[in-house]
Length: 68
Image (cartoon, rainbow, N blue to C red; front, side, top):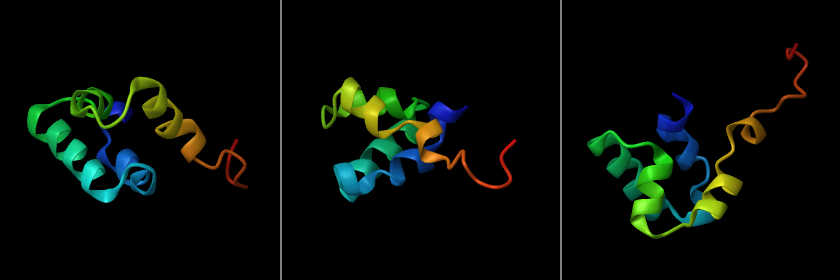
């Protein structure tokens, strides 16, 4: 389910730009693709770069006081 979370790419729009992030998110949503599938299809980002900037574990603060 994380791979289909559109907010992940929106959080990275400063890296690839709002217009590209929006287009990728729309493509994923409209066609039932994962963000990664839509991003790679767009040609605006390669797999290595996508994996680097869209890493849910790195995007979550695991050092928060409420973390187990």
